[in-house]
Image 1 (cartoon, rainbow, N blue to C red):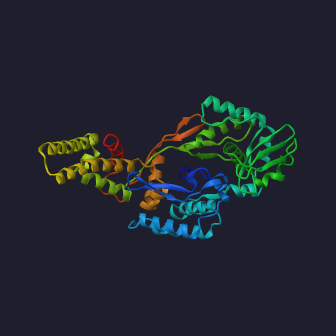
Image 2 (image 1 turned 60 degrees about the vertical axis):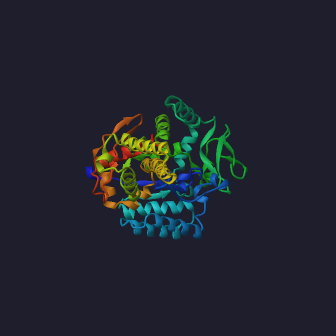
Image 3 (image 1 turned 90 degrees about the vertical axis):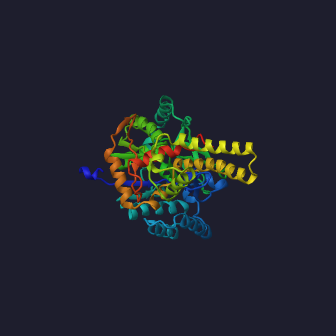
Length: 430
């Protein structure tokens, strides 16, 4: 979008491979499915103490586990003719190349971004920055102004009423990495000595930076930066002009880092966030629509009518009345069971369809169901139609993306209407 307006630049994307593995979305996700939950979980499991380890210290799945998951994905997307085979090949190459779980994720993501979607982006891992001691000067600047940093941090949380934990006096916005793979929170005293306990192996650590922090590089190879300090350090070290933030936690951390950067004199890039919903009809969505139509004898016009939920309620009301009538007339039990089953099954169908269309799926499902040209063009159209709105320290691009795909039955204008109506059908018809 910037290039189209004559603005040149270099795009960087960093993989947070040193995050603790506590967040399940690092190793599993979900896609729509025709079941009682409306979704199927895909991915793997990380259990026990491993959850507290850095993601780059978690080994990739064993070959037999990887093969089973790939077989599951092949079954889920069999018959789809978009970029299915090419994406599968990227995943297999990524698995063979990767040593850790984090590398596996990074290789798959960057492969789909570059080879499938054609984005010209430079990818890097946060662990590369750590191991090469990049941005040490910026880290020392923060340490020298740590009191100001922490004071403004807590003030920003309080003023914005953020759901974030306040920092304690002397808390350092960097993690120290234990030999076991755990990440250690540090607190420093007036003499420049930092202390912390590993949450995994419980080992106590003591780091002496000296009062002028001249010894920081002695330990920096085994340190990583927290979410808020990361925004500050990368913006200052890279001279960032535009920063694309996530619309959830990224914006929350951004409010804090914005307040701190103005206090300590760090670079403040323009921050944008794209807050949107994806509307598309994948194979599961189409099958769900057919299931609802067959169950309730619905036409396309019915599906797009705002009274759809009432129509379904009336249909089920007639079934219930029929069951009551048959029972009163002493009809045979087989017939009563048939209509009772239809009545109960209709509720389950409506609820299942509602859940399918309410599920927030992995982007993987988007890429497996749609052609790359459709995805990129839909994103471009949404961005061109959006009007940035100022939201505190950021600009929000709020425009949904609608994908045409190979759906000839519903137009681009009708797909969001279909979503809204079908999301609601299970709420009152359980």
